[in-house]
Length: 181
Image (tube, rainbow, N blue to C red; front, side, top):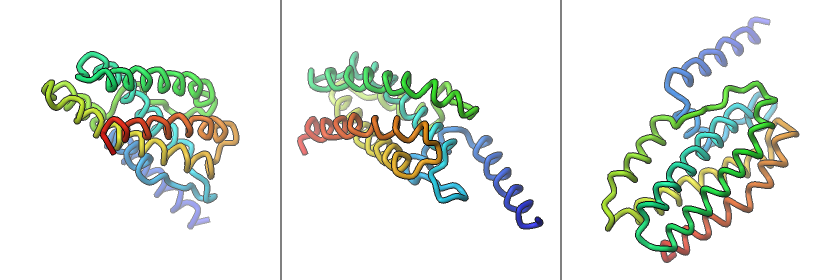
């Protein structure tokens, strides 16, 4: 009983700390190293926070890239990303609502910094900055989706995560193509 109470207190402290530090930190941790819960499955709360923040960033960054992008390839890619991430968000929204998890509605500190970097980029550097961000964020989202699709705790969310994986793989492939890799 004491052990259960200590674990519950520790979990509450961790969740409180994550709330204080902001959703961006929790999402970054979720995206870069998805956490398993006590049952050995991927945490639904971390997944929802990470995916929502990633999609918010993708849509906002894509809209900026459609305006500031220097090459037609980057502009076309950005439109595709906005369309796909808007679709993913809309498909997940009703599933996420059923979990009673608090869903972020705005970017965290990290996402805001990345958006600020896009705004600050010169025309000569914009495409390179945007594509570098895309390589990082699409790879992180792919990791998050794949991990949850394989070991997530919600049987309602797992198939939706699996369905999004091919889209994100295609985005990542296109980023590499645009970067000349």
